[in-house]
Length: 140
Ligand code: TYD
Image (cartoon, rainbow, N blue to C red):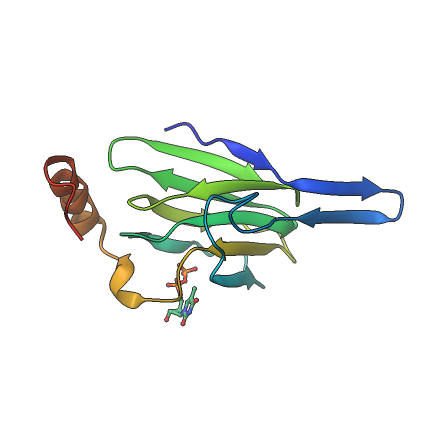
């Protein structure tokens, strides 16, 4: 799958970098939750889940990391290494984050409050969910 990066509005200057994002304007949802992942030890891979409804934007605000996205049919990998760049991760997309550089900080803007019931944490269950969703878009 092809992964498109989005350039957030920004002011990069000799005084540093400023990047901004507004819910419903720069991202296609109201931002209900923000979290960030940092201090990831060398070699650690995280994620390994999809969401049923959650929409997110992932931005590596410092350093770099790779993100693998999988829609159940094809996979794509993107290197996030620019604080003004983000990727949209919608519902039904399996994700894994890895190759975090030392000091990397991955910021996530999310459309929903934390809800463990929205997670699909098993890859085979994810594939079955995707197959079911193809035939039944009322699945929840
Ligand atoms: P998880 O989403 O599994 O992290 P990752 O996919 O990056 O490996 O979250 C790890 C733990 O943190 C899990 O027990 C749920 C908890 N958590 C919250 O309580 N609230 C949150 O907003 C998030 C993202 C995680």
